[in-house]
Image 1 (tube, protein in one colour):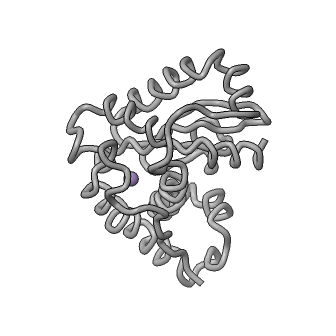
Image 2 (cartoon, rainbow, N blue to C red):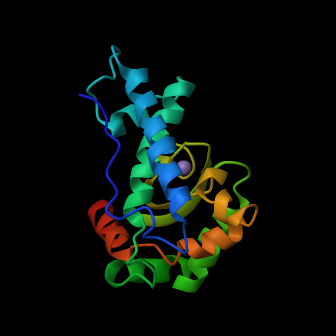
Length: 199
Ligand code: MN
């Protein structure tokens, strides 16, 4: 049994103008596909073959190649899931309450999350996580993620890829513009489901 590149629930051009079709195609069919294949190659014939991706993430810290590819596989799975052509707006219900209680307002949350994403030096990710039932914002380098113990060490329910491959064709050096556009795509229904499942 090996890990498979997930099919997207929308077309490569469905997220325009926020993320362009060419970026989506290369990001999914080349970058994510590469992480998936390299992950499968790295675990083939080892004790990790057949284990869950969560187990692998918790047991890859001493193997940089595996760590990069297992993280790359899991991180992109989350990323495609939490964005959608029907996204944008604000969360409702319990997640909205939790955001207001932790960050004062949705607008302030957006500012803090955007700052974490904009200030991650080089390649990496920014996350909204649950840590001991509380929401936390953090960022991690490369393809690390909190499930490995990096950043806040929590369970991510929202993540933004700030590698240049995620935005450079359309936004070049303007990472803050890409981050602002990302908020037009966030599917808060999915993020809320993840919140309700993990809190
Ligand atoms: Mn990426």
